[in-house]
Image 1: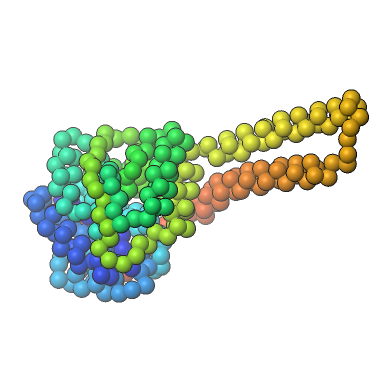
Image 2: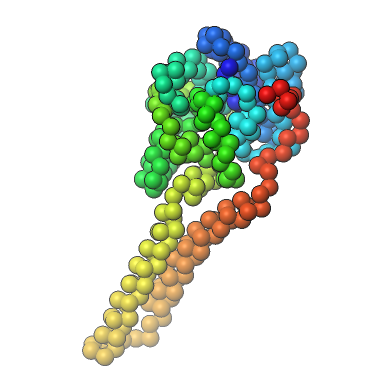
Length: 310
């Protein structure tokens, strides 16, 4: 059985087209399937579209959150509730083509645990987003000890074994593609050209992309903390050189002025480095605090998934 997990945020017009394409693609696999839509606090009529589909098709499941919890949390909820031997993660905007699912499924049967889709081209996206995405994946790859695939999103198919291990990873700041890479199971990829959205605007604003990037870096790398430490040593060294130069000017050259400018530059420079260091440490502490509170990842308002059926 294949479970397809589709997070939804204001995708009212895309739900039916992506559903029809999913059904056509899944039928090719000749396997039973379920499609789980997770409504992540949409402000349009997405939930009514999902309920309408669920009322007509038994294999359509929906999870309706009490509010918006974020894309990665929505996918995590789908993984928690799915019943399949295989799970497919795909967005509802049509940028990731459902027609690749049979290809990925056949690749998985060659003996892999994870098959992900790597993007060759990103159609319909701004130059700024393409450049920042390319930089992010490469910087993340350099900073982390985990080999996180570059130019990939969450579009992939995974075996139930992977799902079960992901469910055991309780951190609140989810970065699923990093978590799956961390597990270390055998994985491979297929390449494709990413399409434009079917309609509407992306729910991934610049703020959300920056938050995802920060979650990815802080979840899989201690480099920012090391950077703060290294910056502190460099500033201390620069301060030591400045002290030697000041003493040399005062006692040897006999050429000195009241150092208002140099003093202010030094204070501002050191103060900036200290604030950066405190901010980085604060980000890690805030994540520790979030996990210590142990609040649930999400709140389900309603669903048609009966857990007793599992």
